[in-house]
Length: 217
Image 1 (cartoon, helix red, strand yellow):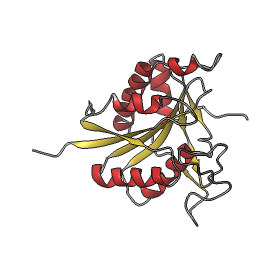
Image 2 (image 1 turned 30 degrees about the vertical axis):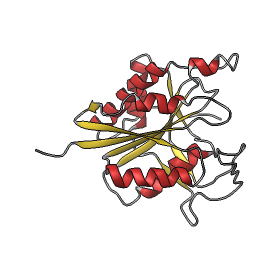
Image 3 (image 1 turned 180 degrees about the horizontal axis):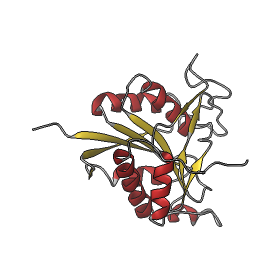
Image 4 (image 1 turned 135 degrees about the vertical axis):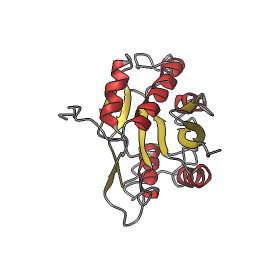
């Protein structure tokens, strides 16, 4: 029998004083799910510069995925953010979970300035909105560990043709938002459903659509 192809989904451990990270809760709920002929493999990454990429690269070697989507929390955002670009800079506003706080350092020495997502993000955006899930195209993944992982992911896959990859940020969960009055949130079950839809759409869409989803500022 043919070997089942795999999709690697990653989430993060809690950070910044939070007790949970909904990115891992949503991703882990899809462990072993079958989507468009692929098996989902979920892995949790530490919120630590350097170590997060070591864990990610180990997962890439183990799983040998056909597609990779890394997911992280962006507290304060109101929608799922389909990230367009990762930049080659670490500039941490707060320390990571090991107390590291790199400032104005490259993710990869002598690496290119940026990498773009290879996911069909516009088609994913249309599908998510069509399903009633708030979503946007984001032009910045920040300069913390999420961008660090996004850039490191795309750099690791730069020579692997056919392996599409990208990054999605998600809002606070309702439990977190209760501790941040006025902050927007999305239920973890909604995020899990959104990720399932995003994975299926990306696997079934060979090339992206053309639609306006940019930003003025």
